[in-house]
Length: 382
Ligand code: SOE
Image 1 (cartoon, helix red, strand yellow):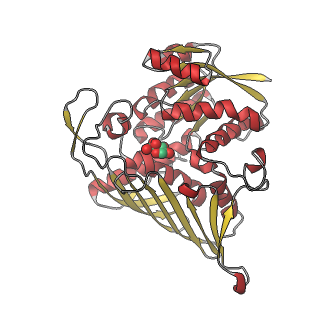
Image 2 (image 1 turned 90 degrees about the horizontal axis):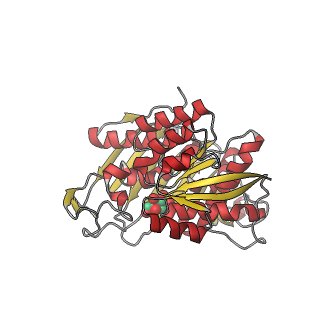
Image 3 (image 1 turned 120 degrees about the horizontal axis):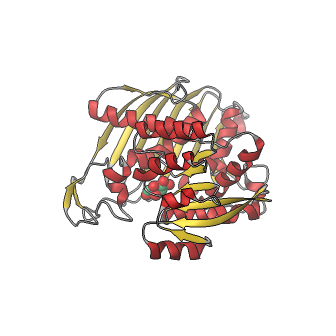
């Protein structure tokens, strides 16, 4: 088997999620490339070494340019904060490397456009880590919609609720809290959480034409974790928007880090002419499905336990009835990416799909400022 040599940049939460997927995928999915964890790269040499030892990377470096220059690396995995995605991805594309990039693709659409141009010019395989598409119950939702089981879609409703920044003492910036620092994250919950909801929605229900939004920053100043200085908070703590999809359906989206009691409650509900679907990340192996075309005397919501061999991805895991979890969505994403390298069907979401999501988040932020409806740019037109 031809090796696929991987260099990862970033050793945080996502560096771990990706590395776990790289290590596991070959044990469960028949791949025609053998994944080799060649090198780990991070700013702190000691932490990078500890990370490399834990996950089995052969070597380490603190210089991502050195990683890209190496002839023995085929794929660069960007698991670093948002403000470095563009520079690394563009350099990696120029170096002829395949690229997996953590979400959101970029700090803003201007950067994302350049990243798309770079990978398309270099013709290198590319994908963004919007992992929730590959939770089997979510993939099953896609199959049901594509098979016409819902008929015409009227409504799409999504939420992503957390509560970890309510305390005003949580700093901005630094290792665990860069998501609160606009200069590193780009935006707050719009780019971090709504981006997930938008990616899933674009995949399940097609393009979004226009949005009207509101955002709020509840804690106005926070200490910076590195400098210790109090600084104005420039990210959005909460963001909600209405949207019109190209297929005529109406949508509501909401994300916040101020929903006390909720840690990562990503839910969506879709209502169509013949049926409805509901999914909840806290019960991720279940898909709720209502089919109005069922016989009247048994009609009702079914709670489908997505763990059977004929349901998406599940034949690769255990035996029917035994469920899998969050980390498996990353494994599925790698499996599809590697399969796409040889079957001529590049796995999505590609960078261009990531740009589509960035266009929606950008329109949301603009609309929240202008207090007007905002049209969403199409990522398809060059
Ligand atoms: C934020 O807390 C976060 O870790 C996001 O950055 C991830 O993308 C999401 O999947 C879970 O929540």
